[in-house]
Length: 244
Image (tube, one colour):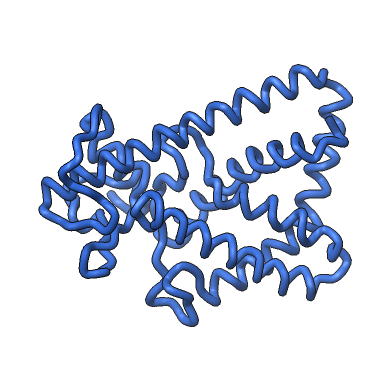
């Protein structure tokens, strides 16, 4: 178990996806004053961009763990690349954008920008020098105390859950966007509003907006449209701090 790269990758992906969910949740509280969903899938506390980014950072930067400058620079580049590709792939296959940095300084197609690039650099130093070494020790400790069969079964169950969750999410997003295109007469890039989606109403506007409060679509005029502005009568946060 300890020597298997495959199992280590799955563990990293699960743990850092969960960690990313809490990081993003706290970030939203401090920057927006809102407790809102920051999850990638409909069910479960997973923000998979962090899971993917952590794996890429760990396996490319670990050899630079004693050089903060290289960790920062290379971490910045790797983090921005993952962020850009995640945004691009999400728009290409799911026809939505999860973030838009078009108004931020030195952005690249609104998918990444200088501010978040700097954050990726600092996160890389923290991850490689402090967080991941402790996680590796924790993994080694657990593998010595718990049977490999139980650990592998646990990992497989969680991975299977995430896979099914991801498949349901893809279908739900497609059904939701078809419904929005029809009900609000919007031409969304990549969405055929005439196709029939079974169980489309299973995923209500409330469920989708509560799960993805910052969801963005691109219309046929290549304009960025925030769905919260269209579905403005649908609540898209759990709690707003400072409200009486």
